[in-house]
Amino acid sequence: MKKSISLLLMLALILSVFALVGCGNEGGTEGDELTVCVVVPTGFGDKSFNDSAKEGAERLKADLGVTVKYIECKNENHKQQMMNAADEADIVVPVGWEFWEITDVAAEYPDTKFIWVDNVADGLENLPNVLCITYAQNEGSFLAGYIAAKMSTTGVVGAVGGQDNATINDFFAGYEQGAKYANPDVKFVKNYVPGENGFEDPAGGKECAQALHDKGADVIFQVAGNSGNGVFEAAQEGGFYAFGVDMDQKISAPEFDDVIIASMVKKVGDSIYDAIKKYIEEDSFEGGRNWVADMATGYISIAYGDEKSTQQVSDELKAEAEDLAQKIVAGEIEVNTTRQ
Image 1: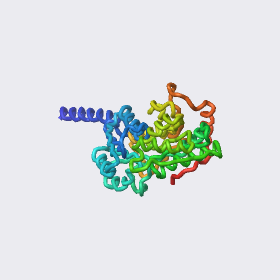
Image 2: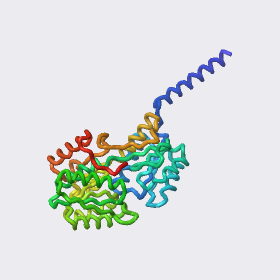
Image 3: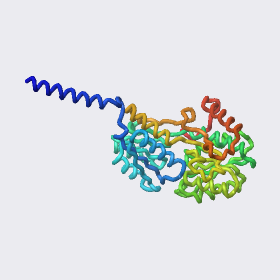
Image 4: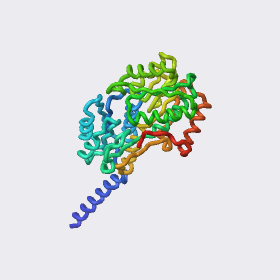
């Protein structure tokens, strides 16, 4: 009997030790037990929007031990690819408006969590497993427009979009307003890369930029994904300046450093990283809502490269832009937007 009691006490002690070990991440989820799948509508290698999402996911893998997978849709089967991702991942991160069927997919996979980047799902309030992230890109674009107008010698600034939609036009709204804030007489011209692959057509982006330059634009803001690399090529050949987007493209696309004066950074990777890190640390997923990542929270900014980059923008103009950023954050400047 005594021997049995001793064995029971020893067993209880062993179990308690294992329980204590398991409490090392109290209230959270172990990162190395989590699988995240990032799904992009086109492919990686754009050096801006999609690559920013991948950069954030790679940091999750390096810092927190998360298993990361990727799916490139190549402009096809967006709904099915979301479902494929949900079959193998705990968290699915669709990146871009093309995944508008997320409402149906999320309902079909209630145990899978979704983080939809750059859009708001229909009926989001009834989707506890979906967190949407949108961005105040209009705020950063205001600064881009201001800098562009100040740098322009022709009085004409331009913008090339990958598609005519609400998100791209939100960039343009802020950009035009900022340009006119700098110079009320400045002329703003814009166009969009034609066709269904507007974000994956560098040749089309180049033609769009050349057309705007023919209208006098000597600083052109590209909001066109991989097509934006064609805008940069046109700038090099045509002798004008360009503005990058999403990532600091003086760094991500250094071959165009001589014409990229700055970039409007939209920290997609950081927002994905922070949302999933919070889930891991707190075991709390804030689904059913839209999180607006803005300038006040540090997810929107202007970047000028690093110490190796050419600096076309003067320190004085950088200081002016920073002062305007503070006014936007403080609510002293209300930036136009197409967001609802």
